[in-house]
Length: 585
Image 1: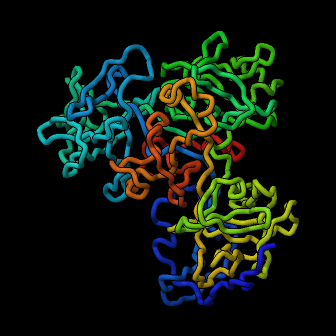
Image 2: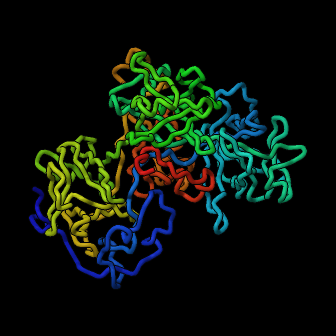
Image 3: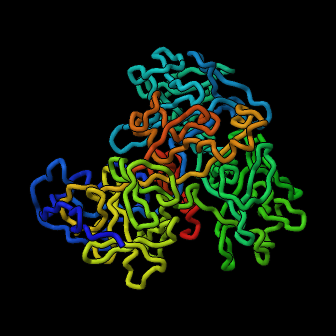
């Protein structure tokens, strides 16, 4: 039992009416989480007016706050390959100032350099302005005033800003755009292997036509949502080992994580997290493997299983066959869609990378909420113990969750007097039900039944009424628990002799979700204005950075890739997203 807030170390409380709503209170900054307002779910005691709170207090009352409702994990900012002439030529750089085209040899995934699209503020009402940054060289694509195109490590008086205007001739390989310099208005074009900008009139720009130059660019996404791919009937995950071989596994580790990247037209490519160059592929004979090609055989559709089956169906766009597991042959294969009517080995499940398990920290990142053998406590230094892990369980009420301690296997509950405790069974009175309301510096965790908010002050944990001035912590941040992951490059780096010992100890590649890239990486301590989310597993070997995710950095559903307006512009809207929330489709 946790002591009441007024016991031993009392919470310092001052009762006031809430201040009037502000721009931040209404969340006019683009949210990176799918949300509903609390007025859609619950009614709080927010009314009245008061003076602004002092610096060492915080007010926990807000009009129509945004509610955390979704927990997918999507890499941000958007990463892509840029190509022209029907994907025959790909943009690449030499690490200096040169930018040129590379002719594609077949459909290999190693076609050109990977670029990061960093959204920028555009004219009012537009969301099509971006910085285009080479993920390998960390250099911006820039336009010269006289038509030259070059790479620069620094920003150059707006020369690095581009607008992207969508064309109608998109295909399954990606979406097509006309890319124009913001400063000069000239259009990015290619002739042979040379890249430059040219002047075009408005009608030609909209159609992407030019008699001499190719001006339509294909954007093929290489980032996406990270999920475990499971076969529910056997409760096993699809694994891709160092050699790219597929199998089923009981584990939830990095080898079992898959990336689902948008391929245009609502289709996706599925690639293993540990191999940035491999994709899940199938042929007309039902064989399934991983390959380095990015052709039509690597494009899939994902839709909810019919006939009351609990899961999703994954179907090849090229061959019309569905992904299944052949238990007799112990292999992945594809088969006729008619099998779905009777075969549960065709039914799959997607779960988010972190499996909705988080470390809950105070807004200053100094204290971690844990459930140890004695009960609830605050830990000063994170140890990543199981006692610090909290699993968010959703309910049948939108936005209403339960907080489950993995260590104690108990639920967090609260009462009307401010006590918080842990119980083994979910009580019928709803005292274990919470909502998480987004604030500028994290989340407010509010009890559904009492409308009181979870607080910490001088080590004591309890709840206080909404609208209460508190000198302690009332904001919480969520740091996702990510699986440990090893990839081929890491194993080669450490050598085969020690590979077995390293498997359980190497740090997670720091793929941090959210719109960190759009906000600028000063927040996460990595130079070059590129988000951690764009750093591939290969590049994470020498990266030692830990980031505690706040609400503005969480990734969910139509978040990151789908929820920000600039990303909506790039990708459009697809109702069957995120993949880990397929039950809500």
